[in-house]
Structures are given as structure tokens and as C-alpha cells.
Image (spheres, rainbow over the protein chains, first blue to last red):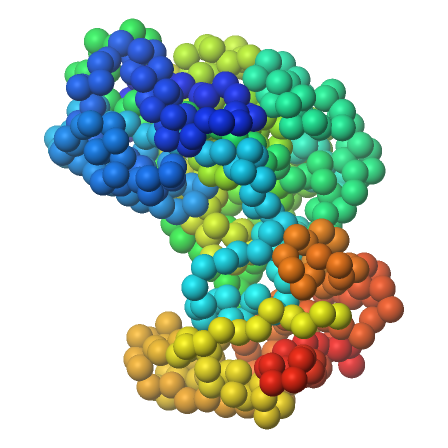
Length: 394
Length: 137
């Protein structure tokens, strides 16, 4: 392999609670940063680079540096929705390789559940733009946008609701093994905190045709933090480094005559795999943004796990379960569908990917060596981003 | 139904579109240099970057590219509505727009991809902009 190993994930923390009333998003970020530093064996003043998605009450960026009391030499405020953290990890790789910093922190905090934010079914406010002026009159919700992609996928390739349901079944299987996910589903008052069957998914109510409730992610509180360090620093940290060996970024949007079933991942995936010098069939762990089943389905195809249109047959038979013996194992923490989705899930993809490559997952794949974290931000059936990061065991 | 959410102004890109809607015209843009069809409305052609665009009136017929039927919406104006459709319509002139397919008995069963549809302008409250929606032909 021609890949380079210049930057590694050395510290991780996922905020344990999904319902955290009375806690601020900034508290979640700070508590997570401190815990991730402890995990790495680094101290507060070691941080010399901040990557921030402008979340939290202060608005992020320069406010976060002030709040933390740090004077970073790199400040990156990339905000591309749920994929922000894959983009930021890519930038941290680049900045560390360029010698601009040695210890980078990425953090996330959100109280979407406690604030009763209707992410999927509410309107989108803000100032008038060309987009809002042409879409607001039609009552398009975020879920209906993703649903339109599923509708077209079913039409074009003959994929079925039963096949899509397999994605929900696999992530729930993993969630039931993760005590934090079980507590999340309990605290958020899921109707059944148990393993599910494809029929359970089909029997759940339709939120926006053809997406059923159990194909949609939860809305939770939560957050976490990630420390990415240079090779030199990584060698002296407490835990084995998890190397960042490839990254790709892309944007996709609705175009006249365009194909809605192909996502930004079709551009970011090959760039990341190319840089890493590995192929999808070598990947043990697929951490793919599961806002909805259709997001995973389209991204599995676009990243090259199977040809376009064939994801239905690919996931049939349960290969995505961590104990299937086939792989890749999908979202082994339980995913956004069944563990954690405060609004921007991208950071959790990197956290669980790192846990797997350290051997610390609650649904551990024996001797997992390679993981992909693929974040999708924005609207899959509209303007969105794709960020792909390839992770390797030391 | 209750009045649909209205476009808000000033918003220079979409003002000509909505002036057209008041006259029963479905307007779109073309690039005068490379002839690319431009939608949503812009101040430049995204294909070639030039700033020379002209407005045209669509014949108003197209096909359903994809759609969803919304069963749950917490937005004012839609909360109390029954299931309604959101769709991307491919107009015959080559542009794709978001709209709704109306005039069917049951949107959960009577709308399909590939269905031929024609624009109509749904009247709103006095003084408000009529909203272009599509009905099966």
C-alpha cells in the first residue's frame, strides 16, 4: 500500500446520554473534549487546532476558542450538515501533514430532543431565498425529501421495502448490544426496545411514502469529541492510534435531468479509497450515515460495495450484521436509527469506527482492520454533501 | 386547504417567476449563450457561467420524476391537512421543479412515477400569489 500514516485518531468520547434536560450543548462539547483528552493521555493545553461545525449556543468558531480558553493555530469552521465531521477529519489530516498543527479537536453537542426540534417533520425557517420561495408552498419535509429518493430507487431498480427494512433490522441488532443505545431508546420512549424483524418495519406507520417510521432515525440529545494527532504525538498516547489513511469530499445537488438515486458519495468515495489504496471489499466496518434506510442504501452503492441499483439484493440475507461472517458490518453502535441522532451524526461514525479498530465496540468484529466513515449532510434528494474517511488499525 | 406558505420578497431571483404565476404563466430561464435550461432561477448560467439569461413560458406539461406523500408535518398550514403529495416534475422543456400533484382521489395510490401532468395555478387568499401545482392529464 502506498498510503501514508501521518494522522491518527488518538482520543474519543461519546456523550452517554440521549436525553439530557438542563444541559447545554456547550457543556456536552466541553465534557466530551475533556474526556477524549483523558482517553488519549493528552492535556488541555496540547490542543493547537479546533474544528467546529458551528453548533452549540455560542455559534462556534471564534466563540468556541474563547469559551475553551485556547489559542489554536488552526481554526476550521466547516459546516456541511451531518457530514461536517468527515470533512473536518479530512482537513485535520491535511493540516497535520502540512505541519500546521499536532493535536486537533473535533466536538459536537446538541439538545435537539430536549428542545423538541422537529428535524424531520418541521418547516425550515430563515430568510427568503430562491430555494425557499420555490419549495415552501409545497410543504416538503426533510423526510419527504429522502422518501422521494427511495420512491425513485424502487421504481428504477425494483428494490423492495422488505430489502430496505433489512438495514433497520441490522442496526437494531447492534443497538440492543449497546447499553447506551438501549438507554437511548428507553429514554426516548420507543414503543418496543427489542430486536425487530423486517415485518415490524413494514408494519410501522408511514411518515412520508414510502418511508416507514422504523426507517427513520431518532431525534436525540447528545454529542462527543475526537482528538486527531500527528504520528509523533500518536505514538505517545495511551491507546493504539487509529490511522486516517484516505479522505474524499463532494457536493451533489438537484439538476435538470439528473439522477436522484446517485449521491455525493459517488464522487467522495473513489477519492478516499484511492488515497487509502484499499478497495470496498477489504472494508470490515461500514459506518454510513443512517438518517434513513435509503441513505445507507444509496451510499453503499455509491461507495462501491455493490453496483448501482443492486443494494437490495446485496443487503438481503443479513450480511450487514456484525456477526454475519460476511460483512461489512454496518453501524455497529446502533446507528442513527437506534442509538444516537442529535442532528449531525457524522462524528459518531468516526467514534464507532475508531472503537472497532481498537477492539472496543459492543458489537466487535473480530480483528477488524479497516473501516469507512461516510457522512451525508443536507438533503439526499436535494443539495447535499458527502464526506468519506478511511480508517485503519495500527 | 388553508393558504399555502407564500413566497417572500425581496428575493430577486424568483420575482419574475412569481410575477408569471400571477398571470397564469409557468416561467423558466434559458442561457442566451449556450442555450442551457436554467432552473431554479439564477443570475448566471450554471453550465457556462455567463450572465445573459432570458425568461420563457413553459407549455406547462411534464411527467412525475418522483414523489412522496407526506403523512406528518408540523408546519402551520399543513398540520391539519390530510395526506398530500410533494413531487419533482420534469417539464417537457427540460427543467425539474418541486411541486404537488393534486386532483386525485387518494394521493397514496393515485400518483405514479412517469405520470403525465399539467400545471394549474391554485388560487390562494385575496392578494396572495397563486401556487403552481400539477394535475394528471
